Length: 74
Picture 1 (tube, rainbow, N blue to C red):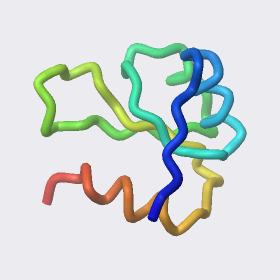
Picture 2: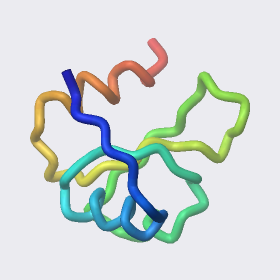
Picture 3: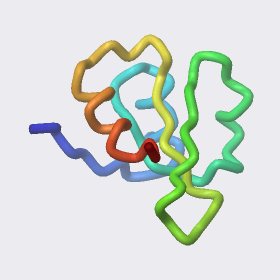
């Protein structure tokens, strides 16, 4: 069961992702897009095309893959 935490700000959420602490859902027009260590995945099942998932590419937590696979369209 994944641990769910809510960040108190967008900046805090971005720091968690950059540190490899978790996965977040955020606006894809975020400045973090320029960070080569962060991976983005477009969420196709939502009506807002700017929503994306983001995580650190060095995050090897097995729950990260299970969570993100729920958003990948087969």
